[in-house]
Image (tube, rainbow over all chains, first blue to last red; front, top):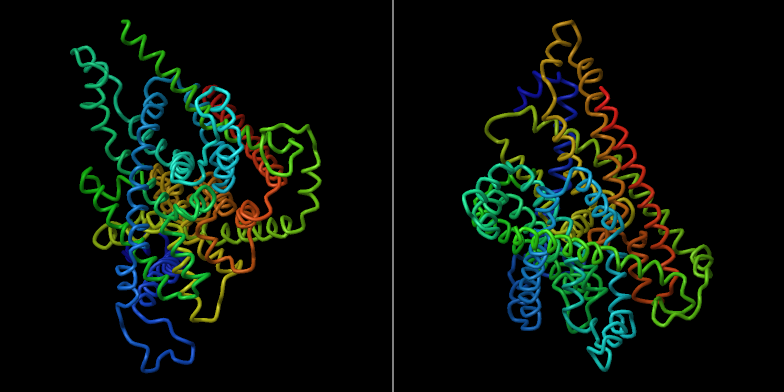
Length: 295
Length: 267
């Protein structure tokens, strides 16, 4: 590898490339993750006790998690809700991605893409805050439902998981639309026309032609959305209530309220392990590689 | 025929609903700025006012956190862009064993939840006595923003015609001259747009920053704490300004894109 870099760029540039990447991957990616795992396997100690006889390898921090029914329940709720968010986002995004890629004229598609990007240049907090206003107890949604005669007293949307789910679909939709759009766009329109000419209906055309072709895009979109949803702190902390806590909020509390970083590190590692598991699972199911994801 | 017409209508209706879903929340958020109410809402409408803009102007904490955010974003720009460019050069040059391992490593920050990146950075630097602040914010954000830069630069590098490189060398240029005069100018547009993206990503980041910011509150953290404690429509005024800024940027970008497209057609 070094030889190829040297041949192409000469010593100074090749050296700079390797040096810069080394600092990044070792100091900013690998070692911090390693340190986090190391932390999770040690008890929380006072600075004076570190390196002493109490500083031993232990699984206590993980056992705390498996013995805490509330935390276990929140962990599984986070998984289930994130899967739900991913599925909902896929359903909402697919028709749009298909329209942009195959139905719209280039001008329409460019305009739609621009309209799509605008809300996503505004940060996640403000996008979530917008829903906070809509869902408020005396907010516009309750007023609208009341005016339509659908409810006779306001609903507390911010008290359950509904708000969190809607807010997350809204916050992460672009991460689904773009991979889908890229994947569908590369499909030759003649294939769709051929399927139609040969008598396939719309549903069959999508199931047999478009969806199989869009697999890498679907996989990428699902991975990104799930990862963002499971790792989100902003949306549940604004749109959720104490009764609908997210796993990230438990992690945060260990760090900044419980003051037990070792315990927090163990919880953080569990979240990381969950995401790695999900990524591998999706790549297996859709039979795609890492190279397809980065496209 | 009637079936495809039905689908035509269905997709139009779907598009309308979709874009309403996308923009109605933003419109309501903006409208609430002008409502003369202590709490941000549009129902009931208590009369129109502009006072929340002056409240925002007078908000010292907001200005401090904006300053922190801009500093962090400038820092991320300086750290993440060189890393991303170096990785892109590496990935488009090197072949053979070990490459897929490095590639996985490079992509891993994109597939790691933001909170984890924040937490691991916080823990790692504690042993050197460095606690949360702008410095750690820059390091933690760059860890994953660099991967986005890499993707954008790689996309352009893959279309690079390597015969240009050989021509330069054959004509007597040194490898450094080739890099400086051929490769970097070719990469300029990709590097510029990656820089803009890195800057914006840094400004809008919350999940990672939350763990590493320490007492150097950034704008997103400030807004989130405002929403939870002491929420007034001044937050909406801030949102309105950010949306206006975004829309202006988007319009400039679109005009430039159309001009470029027209210029390409004319050629």
